[in-house]
Image (cartoon, rainbow, N blue to C red; front, side, top):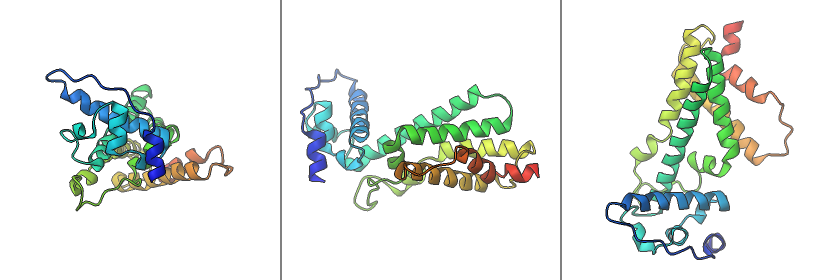
Length: 220
C-alpha cells in the first residue's frame, strides 16, 4: 500500500488558485475528479488517499475536510458520480433506439457491458472494490450503500418489463428476472476483465441476454 501511495503522489500537483466566494462547490468537484484520475491511472482504489487527492488538486489535505470527512466519503462520491454517468449512458442508448422492446433491451445491456469494458477500474470500484468501508468506522452509512445503482437497475427492469408486456419475454416477474440478467452480465464483465486470454464466443453477450431475459422461452 505504501508503494501505491508513493507512486500515486510522487509528483507534486500544481498549487490551486483559491476559490472566490460561493465557489466552494467547484473544489468539491475537483476533489472527485482528482480521485477518478488517480483510480484510472493506478487501477487501484488504495491509491486514493486524502494526501494523494490533495496533491493532485493542488491543495493542503485539511482543505478537503469541509467537503469530505474521510476517504470513504470521497470514494462514495466517485461511485455515485459513475453510477449517474452509467445511467445517462443507458438512457441515451434508449433514445437512439427504435420502438422494438427487444432492441431497446439489447441496447441497454450492450451499453452496460461497454461501460464495464471501457472503464474496468471504475466498474470494479462501483460494484464492491477494496474501498468498501467499515460502516461503523466511517462517515458512509448503510443507507448510502443500499441505494447505489438502484436507478440503473430500474432502467433494466423497465426494459425487460416492456419486453414481457409485448409478449417477447416469458418473464412474469421483471424485477426479479432483471436481477438475474444483471448478475449474468456482471459475471461476464468481471471474467472478461480478469481472464482476458479466454477465447470468448463472439455471441456470448447475446446468448446471456437472450437466455436470462427469457426471450427464448417466449419464442418457443
